[in-house]
Length: 248
Image 1 (cartoon, helix red, strand yellow):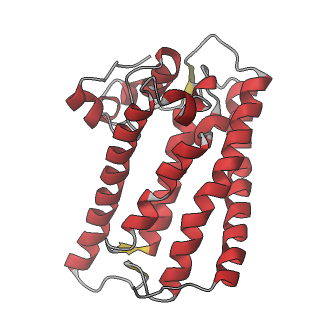
Image 2 (tube, helix red, strand yellow):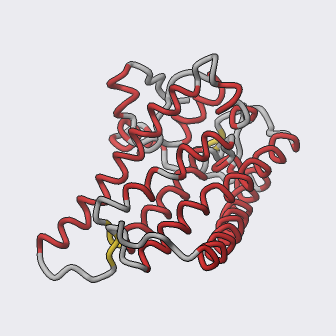
């Protein structure tokens, strides 16, 4: 395989750098959002639960999110080093045709739908009574989640999620700019959906957006009821499979 083997020393340096970046990004983004919502109680956001998150809940969310950072950084580091050696389907050249520009959007849709599909079915599987304790229980200690819960995955769940997009990047062409945009979408989506507050306007949530796109009003119900509403970005699979429980 092109790009393999990768230099172990450089990969270790890249891995440690990615881990530090992911952890720093987590605190830089989540800290201000948590303060703005739970300490300032903004008028334009709608609180979804009367229950106050406890310090123990927040500590657990930060602990699991920090562990997840070490897990997510590994496949990212490996794929970056493989890309540098020409062994992935990632590319950086700007498109030179209408078809090339069209593929930019098509590839983003492919990756988003694939991630949403993978998340839905693995997430639903992890709720099986024989697997829940070992794969997903830590995340659900946040009955009332906060923004700090955005990446508070149990290690097995983090491994399952962390490898999907990097493995896809070995075979399905993706512009590096789109890859960075997808990471931003993933981060914003995770933080807002676990915020415990609905930050989107009610007319969005009750309109087309809320009927198809997952927001905190949809995901918060998953945390309080523990069943249903398993999707990541879209309500598509929940509706197809009969697990959509509506909105808070």
